Image (cartoon, rainbow, N blue to C red):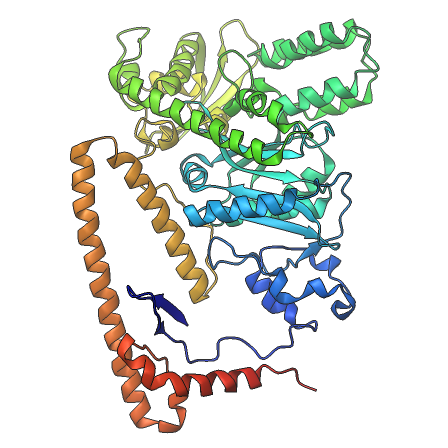
Length: 598
């Protein structure tokens, strides 16, 4: 039922759902788990379900387990309420309550704020996840490649903070969501990825970068099997230094050489030679850790392009600055609420940086290396940072040699290599639709055509980059329009889930509209007027729907009087007093129906 407060302070029932809307269950037996799974966002893998709920602590009462979520949408049905924790540290006394109050306040101020809490079998908080509406909007536009930053996870001097990071069209780091992981099991990490997808309406990243921890690899493979999984070079670098700290005598010198080997080589042969020289210098040729790493080099080495999303022009990691800003407040002795306040400030700073970059972009034009049609066209579409990457590839293509080796109808195949280098790549070109594919796969990994493909396009006298090779995520207008792509996400046929999905999509659209309209008075005035008209139109549609429902209900009631109590009833304020007695009778019947069966 819906109860509204009148101006005189009295309350009146404005809507009553007469249909029985859940199964008859005993909330203290095993069948109650289904209802819990439908309503609760505190989960456990099916294999860890308690065997006998009746023997649990009285605090297991269903009503004490249901925490309000940011929408009606539910997590997948293979998750329950607890995990069998293997945590190595606990929250301080009182922290869980403070955080829950903080999240509830955030959600009250902004209904799109998403948070989830995982309990262990002792009802202790194991994991905490959160994402505000701006994070979710950012993910909708730039969530194609995601980095799971877990550098604080195993350091007991810091809170177990992890964050999902992305990169915007200005090549600036974004935080899509964050979590505190006090539990370190595979099932806990599965919960983390499940919850992340839940917050993002089921939209999966195309690529995810993580550390090489076996539990993380297993969790990603289980929850995100279709997503490309690569190793984050920065986290791998840190783990290697930690792993070899007792083996290498001059740790500082090794760190510098190792970092240079990873970041400073753009040619595969140069990288291989530098790696071998490093092993010789530090007598590490037989080290199993480094031998394993080298076998997996294509998953992490920058020269292969798979980590380029998070490497800036100075060969440093974009997520590093974010972590440095948060580090002092992540100290385990720091008050957790102070950390959240600081986290909010860091988020505001990052968003302000994007606003400044967008403002600068609208007033400055990038410097072109020459009077080239291809570059002029790209500079008008790409953001300055994205154009910088593209222009660098064009400069490289001037030194690329392309030799056609075969042709079959529309398809032509080229062998290309940089002048003076032995490394060859195969570029295939389809003249029917200007499709170009390079074996280096830079476009697939980073979103920019490589120098090899650009050389072939130039050879074919194509002076403007085909539109399919200019990704919207790198364009100046990347945030204009709808970015949500749910082609691989099918909403369950549940009216509540559908309504919740519509609600969240509409919130994000309105949020994006508000951010854009606020930049100009004229835009704000136009948007306000259109929004008012939209609200009026929506109210007319809903009013008509309510009238149609009343007509159907009345007709059904007259035709089948015995079934009238199951008809949906809409009550206005004047009808409350007349219906009060029948409402009490109906409520009594429902209560009797839900009594435990013996």
